[in-house]
Image (cartoon, rainbow, N blue to C red; front, top):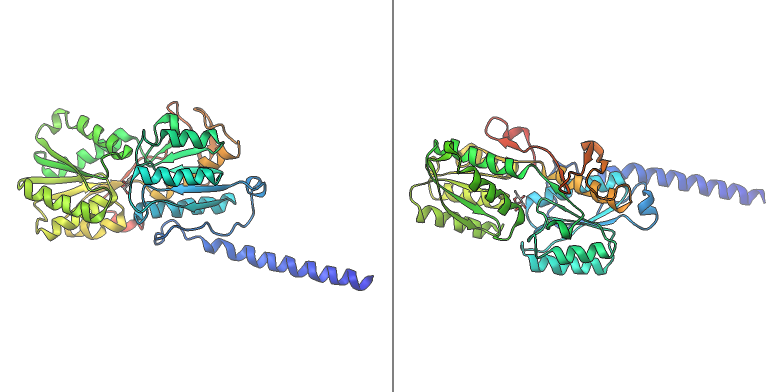
Length: 361
Ligand code: RAM
C-alpha cells in the first residue's frame, strides 16, 4: 500500500515538473509583432492556459485575410497569434491566394460547415459577402470584420484601422506636398471591389474638391488587384500614358511598393513620386531612394490583435457586440463599439526618412 502511494507521489511530481517545463517553453513559440512576418498560413501556438471558452471546447477562431502572401496581412496574423496566446484560444490563418470575393465566399462556406467558433474577416467585397456573413451569424458563429468591411447586415462589428475620412485626407495631403500643389496625379488601387480602398478613394475625391487642392488633377484610377506584377505593370502604364504625371497614390501596401519599384526602373525618381499606404519594411529602400518620400499606415499587428480580442469578447458572451459595449483588449486597453457598429483602432502614422528606421513591420 505504502509502495503504491510513493509511486503515485513520484508520478505526480514528475508530471508537475513536465507541465512546468512545457509552460515555460510555450511563450517563445509566438514571435513578437515586429518580427519577420509569417509567410504561410499558420496554426496558433500551443495553448498554455485554456480560458473557459477553450476549456469548454470553444475558442477556435479563423483569421481570414483578403489574400495570402501579402506582408501586411502576415503582420496582422502575427498580432492575432499574440492575442490568441494571451487569451488561450486558437486562431488559424486561412485565405485564398488571390484577393477574390468568390474564392473568399467558398472558404467561408467551408469554415461555417466546420462550425468554427468565430470568423475575423478582411472582406474582398462589402455586399457580396453579406449572405455568407448572415449565414455564419445564423449558425451562431460571430463575424468580426477588420481592415476591409462586410456591409453592416453581414457582420457583428467592423474594426476600422483609422477614420476613413482621415485616411483619404492624409493621402491627398501627402500627394499635394510631393506635387508642389499642382499637376497630374493618379490612383493605383487594389481590386475594384475592395470595400476599404473604395471608401478611401471616395474620400480622396471629396478632399480634392477643396480649394487648396484646385491645382491637382486626378487623371486616372487603375487597379493592380493587390498583385505585385499587375500593380507594377499598371504603374508603368500610367507613366507611359501620362508623361507629365507627378504623383501616384497607391492606397494599398502591394500597389505602393510595386509603383515605387516601377518609378525606379523607369528612371523617374524625382519626376514621379509615389505615396499612399505601405509597410515600413517594404518601403524603406524607396523612401531612401526618393521614389516614395512619404506614406502612411497603422500597425497591422495591432489590427489583428484587436480583431481577435473583439471576436473573443463576442464569442464568449462578454459583450453582445452592440453599440456602447465596452471591453478590454489586452495591451491596447479599453475599446467601445461606436453607434455605427465599428471600433476604431487609432490614428495612422506618416512615415518618411525622419522616422522610417524606428519601425520594423
Ligand atoms: C493592402 C490591402 C489591405 C489594405 C492595405 C493598406 O495590403 O489591400 O486591405 O488595408 O493594403
